[in-house]
Each structure stands twice: as C-alpha cells, then as structure tokens.
Amino acid sequence: MSNDSDNHSDPTPTRPLDVVQPSSSSPTSSDLGDAEPFSETWTQAIKVLDEELIGGPRLLTPRDLAKELGVSVVSARKIWRAMGFPNIKADEKVFTQQDVAAMATIVELVREDVLNEETAISIARSIGQMTDRMVVWQIEALVEDKMSSEGLSDPEARREVVRLLPSVIASLEDVVTYSYRRQLNSALQRLTVRVEAGLAASEEGRDGTEDDTPLPLARAVGFADMVSYTALSRTMSERTLAQMVQRFEQICAEIIAEGGGHLVKTVGDEVLFNAETPEAGADIALALSQALSDDPVLPSARVSVVWGRVLSRLGDIYGPTVNLAARLTALADPGTVLVDQLTANVLADDERYILIPQPPQSVRGFGPIYPSMLLRGAGDGIEVD
Image (cartoon, rainbow, N blue to C red):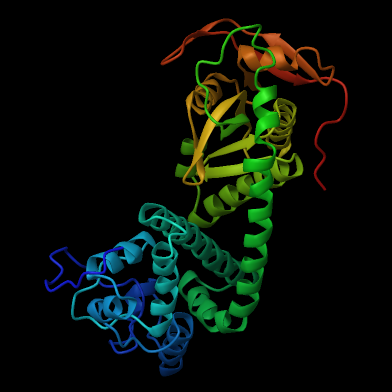
C-alpha cells in the first residue's frame, strides 16, 4: 500500500453513501413506498441506529482517513471500494474511528508482509461481498416475518425492523463470529487436508485416459434448475414469488448440507453445489430431484452431476466440469438427473445407483457426449429431518 500523500482531489465520479447521514435531512416517505410520514421517534431511531452501527459520529474525510492510516488517499480508497462501498467526495465527512481501526488492520497485514496488497484487497472484497449479501438477506427475512406475523404492509414492516434491530444486533454478531470460525474450519478440511485423496480418486473411471484439465480440486459438481420458473414468476405476486424462491433455497440447502456437500451459490431458479466424492454428489442430486418433484408448491427440477476437477476462486468454482454440468442440466427432462460418461463409469459398479444410457448429444464446447440418467438403486439415500 502506497505511503505517499495525495495532494489531488479525487477525479472519480462520486455518489452518496447508501446510508442515512445523521447530519442530513430526514428520509421521506418516498424512500419506503407509500408509507405515512416519518415521525420524530422514527427519525431519532434511525440516527441512533446509524451511529451504533458505524461506531460513532462521522468526523473524517477521505484525506483524514488516509492520513490516520499512513497511506495515500488512493490506497485507502482501494480498501474502501474493495469492501463494496462507493467513492466519497474529497471534502465529505463520512468516516469514523471505527473505520480507521478496521482498515488499519488490513494495512498492517500488508506492512508486516503477512499478505501482499493484491491478496489483502481480494480478502477485503470477499468480506464486503459476503456480508453485503448476508445483511440484505437478514433484513428481508425480518421484513417478511413482520409482514406475515403482524399483517403489516411492506413500508410498515421496514420501519418496525429498524426499531427491532438494536435488540438483535449483538446476538447476530455473536452467531456470525461463531459461524465464521466453524465455516473456516470446515473449509480448511475441504480445501487443504482432503485434497490429495480427492485428486487420487478423480483418476477412477478414466480407463487409462489422461485428465486433460488438471485443475487443483476433484469435485462432484451439480446443478438443480426449477422447471418453468420464468413463466411461473410472471403470474405471481411479489410475496408469492419470494416464498417460492425461499422454499427452493431452503430445500436445496438442507439436502446439500445433509449430504455433506457445499452450496456454492443460488441464482434465482438455479442452485450450484459440489461434493468431495462422486457418490456424495450423486446422492445429493437424486435427493434434490426427488424432493422438488414431491413438493406440493414448487415445480420439478432438472438436475445434473459431473465428477471432475475444478478451480476454486472468489467463493465460486470454475472449469470444464462446471460448464459440462450446466449443459447437462439443460438437457435433462423435468424430474430427472443426468450424468456424463465419466461419472457413469465411476458409479457403475455401485449397487446404490442405476444408470440408463441416453442418446448421444452434441454439446457446444464439448462435442459429442454420452449422458446417462441416474436413478436410485439399493438403499434409501439422503433423508432430511
């Protein structure tokens, strides 16, 4: 991180922070739809919560922040933007001493040669992106709860959430810290300790052929894609659509966790998961297909799973294995699971699975592939409480 001073104003276009400034005018009813005018109590609640969350009054400009950190304005801005926040005008007082302390932690990791600058910025970005999604999820869950349990309108529910938050922030922070350490421990095992065993297992089923994509992790990669989601979403109210998406995500998350897999991401009507063994991937795929087909509210799903190698970066996975799994999902019939030939070879001698060869398909980027439909054989598979 550069330690030089920055004597020039920031030429980058700016926009205000997406937070309520204690010194600015109170928010208007248009900010939350057709809400009734905000009361003085409401405005005060916003101000109190604002200062509690950011750790005090906003007293520092970007230049002040950089000076306290001992870095240039440009370097301080890199960290701020990596955390997911917009640029600040050079003379705008936005930062608190809590901002200084947090960003100094990142700066010191670089100064002490624990991390290089690129890695520090990447880690800051990971924190910003994950916590941004987390807090949006939490706020919307609280709003939905207020609407359903108390019969409030959306604007009324959002006002009530602001009043509720001070009583739950500390508890949520405790759980986040606990979850971070538990997830870090789980990822440490998954991404370091058991990697070599997975790579050795990835050679199974190749019949002597070499792996032409020697990426560092062996994983079963799967997709589940709700059928007719786009058409259904056009006919639903906002609340009904939200309930359907939440139900889909909840069912998928529970099955993937129960099967020992990892939910990589959800994108609307689709979930991407991976598992450390082809058998775990197959069990998860079959359970997802069955659960979504049996659900009285959700449509059935097209599901695929492919055993191969992937690259794990930025909280996501990449490589031909992921692309092939996505292509197979598009080819699957509703309520079925497709696997590629390699995955079928690996599972062929396991009595827990039945594999039915399907007609060859020409797949963009892969040429001809030979999919098989995966069915449950002996045993019950994954059972979710």
